Length: 392
Figure 1 (tube, one colour):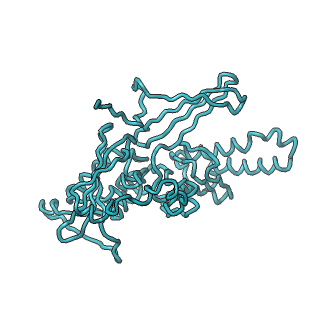
Figure 2 (cartoon, rainbow, N blue to C red; figure 1 turned 90 degrees about the horizontal axis):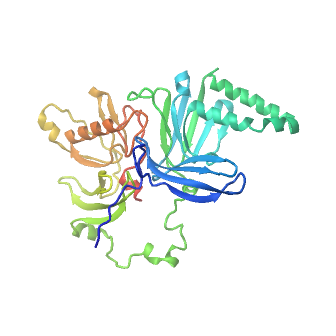
Figure 3 (cartoon, rainbow, N blue to C red; figure 1 turned 135 degrees about the vertical axis):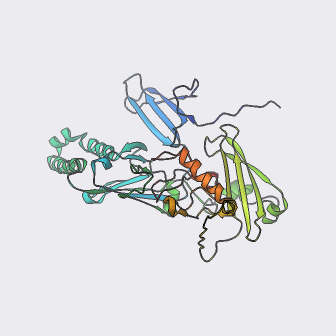
C-alpha cells in the first residue's frame, strides 16, 4: 500500500502559501444572469477559527460578491451578548457574527433577525453603518412613490445616526443559536465591565434551524439504513466492551484543521473516586493534540467545592480531576477559569497551571484559535468546543 500525505483541510491564512488550493466553480450571476466564477478557499484565520471564503465575480457585468462562512462545528450552547455602549471606544469593538446572529437595540426598537444577513467580522459602529446603508439604498425612488414611508425611514435613520454619534447611552444585544458569536473585550484580561455574556440551551426549533436532529426525529433512518441506529452485534459499543478492551480507536476529524484523525478512548478507574473515560486525539496533518476526561457515571445530586492551600512543593503534585463544568479560581492571582474551560482533565495542580499558561500564550485578548481558553473574571470567551462537541 502507498502512503498518501495528509494536509490540513483548513490551512493558516498566509500570503506565503504557494498553493492555497482555491476551488473554482462556474455559477450563475444573479445580476445579469450570465455565467460567472465562484472561488472557494478553506482557510484558518489565526486566533479565530476555520472559515470558508467565497468570492464571486462576473466578467460580463463586473458584479462581485464576497462572503465568509464558518467551517467549524456549532457550539454546544447558544450565546447571548449584552453590551452597554457608553464610550466612543465601545463603537470600535470587534464583533464577529454568524448567519444565525440576531441583533437588537432595545432603546431604538431596532432588530436584525437571524439569517437575514451573512456572517461577517465587523465592529459595533459597522453594524449601524450597514443598517443605515440598507435602509437608505432605495430612498430616492421611495420618496417619489411613497413619501410617507420615506419620511418615517429618514426619521429612523436619524435615530441610528444619533446612536452612532453616541448622543446617549444605548444597549447592543446579540443572540446566536449556533454559539459562534463574539464581542471584543478591550480591557482583557480584566473583566469587561460593560459587556455580559450568557449561554442558553437551544430549543428544538433552533436545533432544526441549524440542521441538528436526533435519531428519533429521523423517522426514515431505520428503513433506509438500519445499521445507523441498531448495531449488528448485540455487544457492539456496550459498556462491558469498554471495560474489557484496553483501548478503543475510532476515526474522527481534527478539531483544528478538520483533517482525518484517530481518537483513542479508554475507560479507567481513578483510585478512591470513580470510573472515567479518557480520550486523546493526535492529528498527523497539523500536529494538533487534544486530551479530555469525561465521567463514566451519572451527574451527582449536589455540586462540590474544594479549597486547596498550596504551601509546599508537594502540593503541586496532588492529583486533580477537573470536569467540563468545573470552575477554578486563584484569588491571589485574580484568576478565574470558567466552567468548561480547558475541558475535562485528570492532572495535577502544577499541570493545571501549565495548561492555563499555555492557552494564555496562544490566545489573544479578543478570541482564540480553538478550544475553550481560560477566562479572567469572565472576560474571555471560547470559540469552539473541544473534541467531544466537534465530533458529535
